[in-house]
Amino acid sequence: MIDKELLPKIKSGATVRVFERIKEKDGERLSRFEGLVIARKHGSEAGASFTVRATVAGVGMEKVYPINTPLIAKVEIIKSPRKVSRSKLYYVRDISKKEIRQKLERGDK
Image (tube, rainbow, N blue to C red; front, top):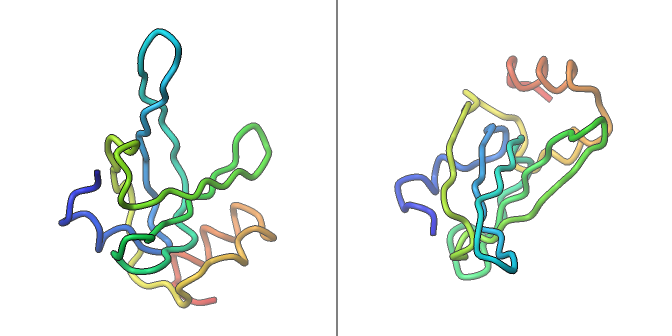
C-alpha cells in the first residue's frame, strides 16, 4: 500500500520509482519500474490509479498502477515538477526525451 502522505506527491510530471511484488513459483521478488507519471485518475477513491511511462531498450512502455493494491511494495518520488500545464501528459508519447525534458523544466505546453 502507498503511504497517505505520498499520495499528493504522485502527480503528472513527477518521476517515480515503483517497487512491485512479483509472485513466482518459489516465492516473491520485487521488480522496479522507473518513469514519468503521465496521468493520475480518480483522485484517491477505490478505483484510483496512476500511469507511469518509461523507455526500455528504445521502446516506450507504460504501466497503470492502482493506488489501493497490496502488490505495490514502495513508491519513491525521484523528481517532482514545479508546475505542469496539463493534468494528463499523453502528448509525451509522440515527442523525444529531449523535448519532454525541456517542456517539463519550463512548465509550458
